[in-house]
Image (cartoon, rainbow over all chains, first blue to last red; front, side, top):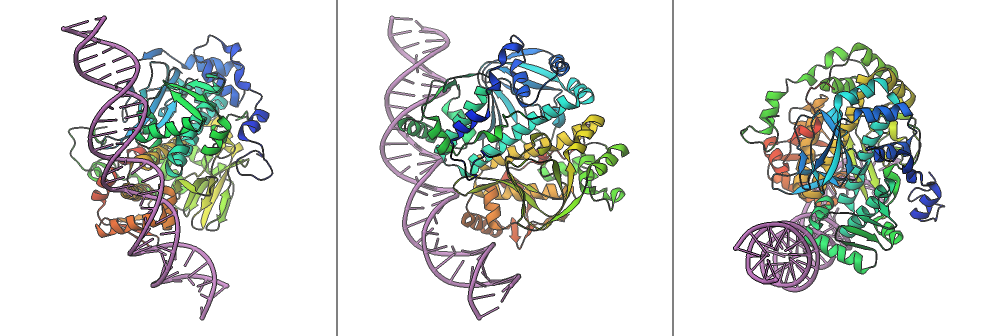
Length: 274
Length: 274
DNA sequence: CGTGCCCTTGAGTACAATCAACGTTCGTGG
DNA sequence: CCACGAACGTTGATTGTACTCAAGGGCACG
């Protein structure tokens, strides 16, 4: 890819590069309207075309829908599981914790994300899954996913792809945790969520709902709540981001991307046959 | 699982728990002896039984074998790929880097690991892959893996499982990077490598080859080389680990596990049908 | 016998953690 | 309607872990 970070001969900003690259395939939500799993279909077909049979198979694989109240941990580590959960509405997170009580949020989830598709092969999780806001989720029984692997190899690869993108996010987070300063980390997560939410139509210009407390942000980014607060103030004072009352306003996304050394490559949003 | 970390009513140490749990299925290497991909077969069949057809399919999927000199970066991020690499001999790592030149190693690889099975669905990587020592690798062309997904659903799930365990390691590393002190991080990685190497028969009692420089350790664990040096000295002075000249001697694994808050759960070494 | 890489140690510094106090908002119940 | 408490957010003062800068030693290799 000629537009990847750090390659010579390309002076375009990340934003401009992606304006050129993506023809906004994400905006085509209409044709699936009303379907519960529409955001999942949107995301999967953004990667590669889904046949009608495959879409039907996915709809069939989703058994029941369920409401989860805010702050509830709906999956605990080490518990035997027989279904994977797709997030339909709301925000969830996955976290691990240490003996001493400190916790690390390893991923944030937005509508259209499977929060534990990996439990299909792992059967128990190494982390917990918690609802941040009230959520709606759909369960995909593992026996139905197994049936998909038996009959739909291409769809199987697409689902496998989804878990691999999840792992790619983990790597980017590790880069943040290991190498970025606190300012860069916070800037980075605001960039990431912008791109992820836009892909499912949940941004409004340069603004989006992001109902995390500062404590949760600190648990995701490996810093203390107090320091998150100071960092947010700095970002606000520099006219980069305003994050208040569960809403993010990106005031200067280009500058933010530069500070965070952000590139959307690791989200694999481009279209490509699998 | 009754032996998971933190559950009440189980005072056994991690080591004793796993002594009870595992009947050393890993030691059964004999029947596959001489096969190039024996360590892969060992690991996959430690999880779930492989049929002869599946083993044959895997052998068929491995095209050519290749030597890689130490320090060579054999896969670069953002480059189109058409094969996945299995590590047969030697140590490799995956890393990402920032504009400013700092790098984060996101995973270390030992023989029997696929270093980029995820490239099968991702088609380009978000990270680089480098040989730490001279290595031998086998390439698995994506078209053959695709054929496996079409004909061998169970084997497909087992390979999918392998990428999901890789992601699980990422999460544990994120926990280290975000929440563990430098002493705990270093202790943790020595524990992890002990379990991973033992699973492929590459430990010798409480000792194993671990040919990383202190700089590489620092790049994996998000600390500076100077501080790694001091931390190693402390571990040595406390009689916990001796790491010198590319070899680790665990002098008190129980204490090390306690310090690191280590549990092998996230490595998914137990047998379980997939 | 240099030269370069890795390891080691010391001294000074800085970023973020910790400790502490107070403000704001919101829901609950008197 | 107001008192109260809890959770979240904000700020200041102090501490500490790990970083930076610097210099020297050991060892392998050409």
